[in-house]
Image 1 (cartoon, rainbow, N blue to C red):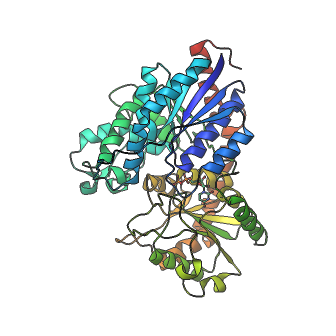
Image 2 (cartoon, rainbow, N blue to C red; image 1 turned 90 degrees about the vertical axis):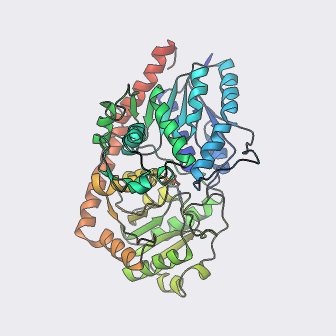
Length: 484
Ligand code: UDP
């Protein structure tokens, strides 16, 4: 029978792309495998997944996508949680019967070596256990965030207050001291449904067969060691950890209509001096209020730096920092300060909604990156050797900021006011520092050397390549199979 691995990503595009890249990597180590990707119907981000899935299907016949029927929450469903993560987790839980039937059907004509699930798809762990299929997590955030998730049940016992009221510094093995206010927004409140769901996933995670993580040892040695030493799960065994990154997308087909934007951005970059451009781009979900956009524009203009800035339509609801559905393109003339586009046209390009970030970061004209600290973006910056300014917006990004600013020292912090607004003065100051200061230069050298470490980790005999081989070897041994 054909040998298979089933991948179950969360539908957010960043997570889906990482999971598919993992599938491609598994195929490069073991071409006889077939990869089956389970797709839930809720895509809740600004980037559509349709064209991405179509392009992967066309390019990689060994990867098959299985689309689940649409699920929706019962009409009387009520949650007090304001976080989109809660909705995502609840909807993913409803997919457990779909996961069960997909795994059962794939198992009829394949030897399924493993099901690899996203952290958000933790409800599928019990389904895999029920069907006796080894279940692995694929963690798309850094190891220093994994330390916190694994340690979460311990923290839950240590404290009785919600993190939002705690005002303490948390000490998690392998991780820089973590202000309780920096722990992910959805788990700030113990009474929020999101807290309960995350706690359940964190508690069950150590019962998985292993954790595959998109990082490499040299990037986060302390966190990786702490996990491997069992320090983050003091009450029981820690599953094996496989650091197989950096896994980054090959870039094609991420979003509908991408290709025009791509060629325009890159042609424009060709005309700019080497290393002169700051990229400002905030993930698949991030966007700002009109007030904040104006502050950024003013700061950029005053900084005198060259820039490429991806601008999205502001939310209707000004409290939100994430797009939950595809948004229309912004009307730049009405959003940005009067005359901004004309005055900066010589040295700046504003791109609507989406830019080919990977290609832009790897263009020789780009020398800095203002990022929301999404982990894919951070890894892409590392692989391109580009230093950053860290502007976390949502999810675990405040923790990622702590890691890249304080521990790895490849990013400058950006300070926001109590109301959450970042002033034009702060934008101006940080962008200048990034591009012109000695500190910026030191960070640039550091990130360039990490770029080389990343290449080495992925090369034959490198740490990430060896860890992936070990994983595949362990599947072969378990099933005594003829995988090649
Ligand atoms: N991305 C892009 N163009 C954009 C915005 C995002 O290509 O205008 C890509 C980016 O290169 C990365 C992914 O979308 O691969 C975003 O993932 P990340 O983990 O950084 O953030 P998330 O969207 O999950 O918050």
